[in-house]
Length: 152
Image (cartoon, rainbow, N blue to C red; front, side, top):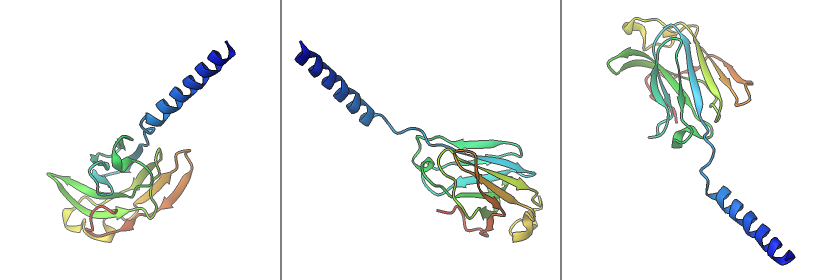
């Protein structure tokens, strides 16, 4: 009887281990918050599964963790968005956001299209990057990248 019980326990443990190994990895999303006065075009690197969206002032968007680009460390790039797929300027914080972390952009940007492609278009723009446990890992101005596109 002891042999049957031991065999049953071993088989149950092996089945649980196999099930755990076959489960998909846990979702690892990140979010981006727009606390500026303008619409922002946001991209998380350049891949098919990376976050890409337009955030109105006060809005946020998140990358679902089951997408390829939403895992691990990700560069976030923003541009002032003028509608009709028109954007201008690119800013990227000098640090990447980690899975389950988030980035908040604060400040004001000029709404004039003729000045949007200059580093001074968003003179007081700042970024705060938070780790998954809520600690600030970066706080300061994002880097001006001209019209370089999404950083990756």
